[in-house]
Image 1 (cartoon, rainbow, N blue to C red):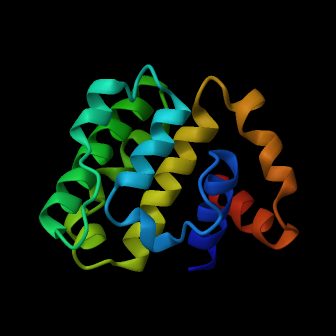
Image 2 (cartoon, one colour):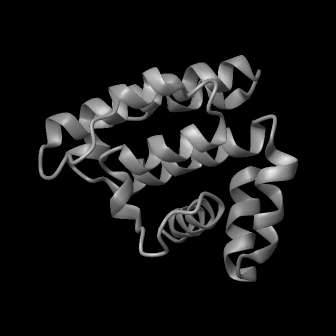
Length: 147
């Protein structure tokens, strides 16, 4: 859970999300999709964004559909970068994330998003400096995740 919190804090600080964004805000796929668009707007394009339904509310079917779409597009993205993370999300379960709100699965989803950020072309300019501003406690968790 601490690793997920560290990743969520880093993602919200890097991508100008409200500081009140919590891990629970990633279960419906909306916040994750917005972050992916900021990571690479060419790959996670307007077509991708239009497929993610916002205002999900308690509709777990829509939430699971959103998560499936972002998992698929994230796999494609990581494979295009030659990242070993391309195979990682194959075992992620959108149902567990969106419906069961499984903490372990959401942590793995956040790791996947972090992997997209640190493997993207803009990583040096856009994201890595923000690692420095995180609390030392969170930095150690992120380094563990990246190794």
